[in-house]
Amino acid sequence: MTDMINTLYSIPAEGISLPVLIRGENPANPVLLVLPAGPGFPVIPEARYLGCTLGLEKYFTMAYLDPRGCGKSYSASMDPGLYSIEQYIGDTGKVMQFLQQKFPNRKLFLMGFSIGGSFAMIAARMYPDLLNGVIAVGPDIDMAAAEEHAYTFILQQAEAEQNRKALQDMKRIGMPPHISVSAFQTRVRWVTEFGGIQRGQNFRQVLIRTLKSIFTCSSYSLTEKIAALRAIGITQKYMLPVLQNFRLKEYVPDISVPVRILQGKLDAAAPYTEAEKYIAGLHTSGTKRIILFENSAHNPHYDEPEKFRNAVLSCLQ
Image (cartoon, rainbow, N blue to C red; front, side, top):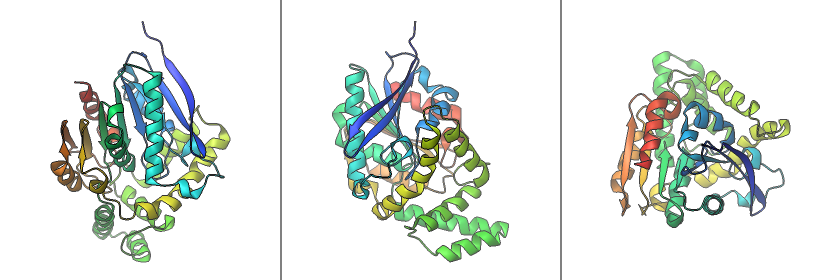
């Protein structure tokens, strides 16, 4: 007999409260804490897809964290000085400690998407005693290399398709780094438009899906739904300069918990070659593995959902 869990918790942290939605079919299952992509995107609205559509709630007690400044945690009064990598990792540690106390004697895993995957790796290295493994999906390995890769991808696609607007936009924002919100979002828009985020989906389609997930999220009030959209640009304003020279190897040269990197081979935002080089050089006393998704871009959970689910479940073996 199972007992469905569907509860929203608020965990005190410096300057704010961190919202964590916990869902699952059986409280005896291991726990999987999920961090979003970004900077600036929430993950609580993704609970329906990850937990229900992909079926992960059958195997895990899922915990979805909207990091500080994102989604339900957004506050207009938050100190801009608290937007930092160190603060994000400290917040993640607080949530992991809460989950360990809430679900004693349960295995705890951490999964993050994109920059959330990078933060998950850092948190796993900092709090190894709290975790049984970490899963990084399309993590940002080297920000400078990723920006150059994305910019080149756009130019190549724009020239192949004779897309004058894309070429004009790239000329206008210039070569990376793109630390202004406007330049960053312009680049992301065209990477998405050309299928470098999700295969077979253009920018409009990905945007509509994102908006739908937020505005149908039952965990958000209408005010919070509107604020979640505003929070994306605000978080990027403060975090893009912080992440400009980010290199995961400098934060996580070694690790002691099992690591899985789930990487789309067609990813134009976080190139798979960087992920392969990183995990090859990663020193670990545990296990490390990279799982390539041949037909996926930056969102393998959407491009190859069945393979993605099986890859996540493999951490239980």
